[in-house]
Amino acid sequence: MLNRRHLRVKVLQALYAYHLSDNKEIKQHEKNLLQSIDKVYEMYIWMLSLISEVVHYAENDADERAHKHLPTADDLVPKLKILENRFILSLNKNEEFLEAVKKYKVSWTFEPELAKSLFIILKNSAEYEEYLQKTGDTIQTDKDIIKFIFKRVILKSLLAEQVFEDKFIFWPVDKDVLQALIAKTFKNFAYDDYKLNKLAEVTGNWIDDRQFIVDLFQQSIRHNNEYQEMIGKKTQNWEPERIAMMDTLLMKMAIAEFINFTSIPVKVTINEYLEISKEFSTPKSNSFINGILDKILYELKADNVIKKVGRGLIED
Image (cartoon, rainbow, N blue to C red; front, side, top):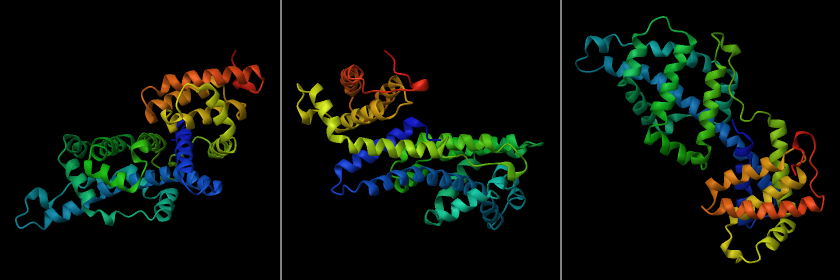
């Protein structure tokens, strides 16, 4: 699921788009931000659907083998055990999943060869043969082969990678989140009674998380000039064009958290943005951002601007 760091990245992306856009309508950009979160969930539903498509291609494969010019005995008596897989049966009865498939208009007809190519890889694997030979299956053993399909077949497929990259612009960034959502789904699907199995949630607490990203986005824009001035005073020896835009945005977001988010410890804020900078900015950004934020934080503390409460008490 999306944790607070992932959510900060989403705000960073939205701020970057805002500052590059001629359209400065904040509400529209805020809407785009929330849609980017929904896109993660949509990607999750598409992936679950693809897993189901791969499993159900076993039936197509069996039909093709049975209608070969000279079918073998094995072709005529195919092993279709996977069609009774408890995880897949439960997934395809899950009302939330079915509603999401309808909402996002999920259909793999636009890429008919994908499920086929993935099933062929599965069919030729030792793990699948072992699954077919196994007896006494449980929901856990049924999940094991689905995990294999997801991790070792789909995620290793260049074609699947290309399809998701084309469909979801932030696939490279959101791929890790997707894997966490799928892992949570495997954990949630622990019952033979499909009504007890639940899909993963996109965040741990969407009500609080939604408020967090909207507030962070709005505060970063509302006080943009003020925060820019703070940064400017500490970077007077730097030519403005030499400071990466991502570095500036990350520092503005950190300052917004220092001042406006009373329950987030300053150390957490600094650590989060330093980690994000490692992935989204330049190699030297980490030490640069850390140095500038330390100076700004020192002054904000001295001016008694930062008010932290509860577990977020400011550290001396």
